[in-house]
Structures are given as C-alpha cells and as structure tokens.
Image (cartoon, rainbow, N blue to C red):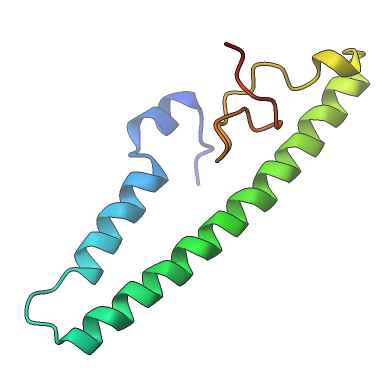
Length: 101
C-alpha cells in the first residue's frame, strides 16, 4: 500500500465531510415514527458525546507530543505549541492557547 503524502491527503475529502455525509444518508429516512425519530436523536447525541470525548483525548495527546518535541528542540516553555493549526472546541489552538486578539 502506498504511503500517504501531502498531495494524496489533499485529494481525499476530509474525514469529517465523509462522516457527515454518511450520517446524513444513514440517519435521514422518510416515514419514521415519532419513537424511531427520538431513538435516532438519542443515538446522535451519544455519537456527539463520544466524538467530543475522543477529540478531547486526541487534543491532549497532540499537546503532549508537540510540547515534548518542542522541549527536545529547545523551544522555551512559553513559546511551545504556538501557532498550532489544529483548532480546539474552545476556539483556541490544539495546545490550549486562546487566540490572541
């Protein structure tokens, strides 16, 4: 299997787009009864909670990995994880910094 590089990553749709499309297809069906609709809403709430928990764990791991690498490179503690491209749910960087205004 060929290794993924920047060019192949750009050619694939983002995982979030693919997941959203799949959920839309699977969960949106005409003719469902009220109880079935409530079951689907509950299932999506559980999925949302699981995704948020996974995102929090991955963000914490990313912070640890990046901060460790930058510490090994001699980056001062106050400057570690500056400019992280991965957003966090709070609107800051993946390293927990709030955006500057």
